[in-house]
Length: 174
Image 1 (tube, rainbow, N blue to C red):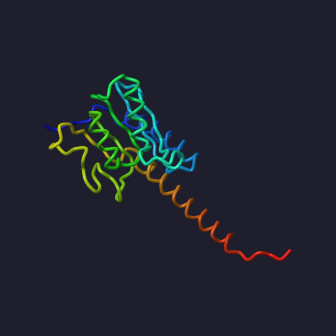
Image 2: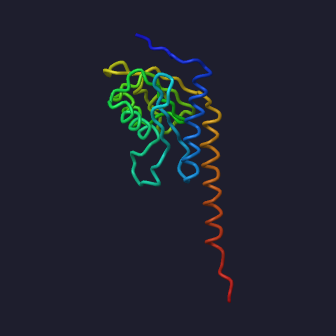
Image 3: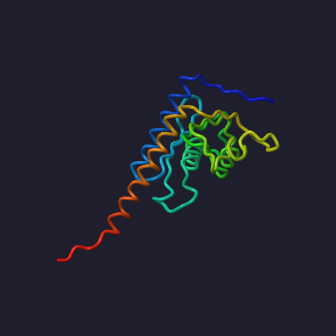
C-alpha cells in the first residue's frame, strides 16, 4: 500500500520554516542547527531543537524533543495522522522514535549522508516489514536547511582555526 502526502507545497514550506526557526534556536546556543516540529490537524503540537551539547545527552535530538512534547500535548504515545518536519534527515534513533510514535508523514530538508536513516544510509521510515511505516519526503526547503548546516560547520572550523592560531602564538615578554 502506497502512502501519499496529505499536505500542499505551501503547507510543507510553512511548517518547514517553523522547523528552521527551531534550528536557529539551536544555533544561538552553539548547537548544531537542527530543528523539528510535529503537526497534527494543521496545528503544531511539538517543537524541538538540538540540545546534545547543552545537556550532554545523546538523545536530545530535535525530533526526540518535538515527539516527546507532542505526546505530552495529546496525552498519548500514538501520534497517528501527525506529520514530522525536520531540517535534517532523521538518524536511526529518530526514525525509530517516529515509527514507534506512529507518525504518518515525515518531511525533511537536507539529506544526512553520514547518518541518515530515511533514505541516505538506510530507510527505516518506509520499510514495510515494520508494523508501522511512514510517507517520507526529502528536500523540503532543502537548500535553506543545508545552508544552515554548511554555514554552521564552516564558522566552527574558522573559530577552531583562529583559536589554534592564537594558542600557538609565542608569548611576548613583559
